[in-house]
Image (cartoon, rainbow, N blue to C red):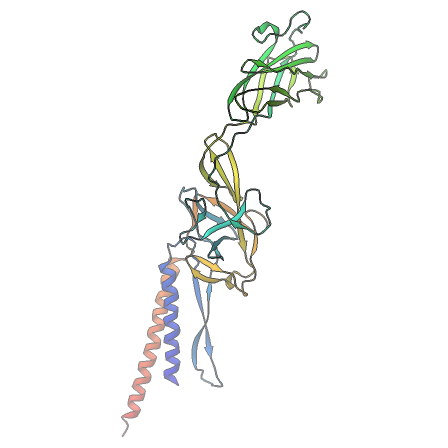
Amino acid sequence: MSFSQALSGLRAAAENLGVVGNNIANAQTVGFKSSGIQFSDVYADSQGGLGTRVAAIVQNFNEGNLETTNRTLDLAITGNGFFRFEQNNEIQYSRNGQLTMTNDGFLTNASGARLTGYPAGSLVGSQPGQLQIPSGGLQANPTAEIAASFNMDARTVPLDRAVVPFDRNDPDTYNYSNTVVVYDSLGTRHNAQMYFTKLNDNEWEVRLSRNGDLAPEVGTLNFDSNGILDTTANLDAFTFNPGGGADPMSVAMNVTGTTQFSNDFELNNLLQDGYTSGTLVRVAIEEDGSVVGTYTNEQSQVLGTVALASFRNMEGLRAVGDNSWLETADSGPAIVGLAGEGQFGNIASGVVEQSNVDLTQELVALIMAQRNYQANAQSIKTQDEVLQATVNLR
């Protein structure tokens, strides 16, 4: 019986050495989670006991340190959650966010599993699917609105249109002008000119031209006695026909925030919502999991959203290698959500999560495991010597 006790100790010590050795071997593995071994004694109506056995090997899911890589597709989760991957119709979970993009636009890890999430336009909260970056460019968007705010100089002397007809080529027929770039449906760039003319106290006329082509519409701005813009400003549409196969343009002006004070004419803000076509040049992932594409026309567009997963009992997950785990009955079903919401942490880009192995602690554990193995071997040797002495009795 004593031999069996020592032998069980040798087996347990050997397995402990294997667990510690595996932790040390993966001290530099991104996203690796260290393991610990638990032992239990063995009794079978035996007062002295029958030795020991390995009760469980438990993984430690504490976060590892973050290391900067400055690579856009290197991701880490700062907080709770797992990346969700799909491979061979099997869902895997991992903390390793080292991604690459395939030639057909899928985001994959080193083993070829594809990152899942919600493609652009899909309903967040539905079943996540494989994220694929579209290969096509961003089509042109015609300008529909110019958003601008000005200060109209209240000291300006009004012009009588009956006496001074408007002429865009004659600056004496208007009081102030400014330029903005607009785009038609084909993405062709046009220079547009805004003209402001004071007609009466607190009343201004607004005109818009495109490449010298004056829109037929005339807008009006009205201010109260405090120089605040009347919200009934009529600047809903200025129409142009750019030709060249492009659709007719209808451009509104939003001049919210425009004032009329006794100060110089001033442009405070000027934006327009059109742009030309563009080609995808960069993909980045924001901390909320949004996959953002940047195009040559300096526009950005959300192309999808990364899904994260969590579990009621992470220690119940089954490790399958390649820094991945599978859902089990012990772990419970995956809870799927978005970064930064509820129990989920944020996603950091340009960094990776290092192994959570404490190398100093593991080296100490290695010495202890070695001593334990040696002690059990010595127990077998002692039992052998006792048995030999018994055999040699005369």
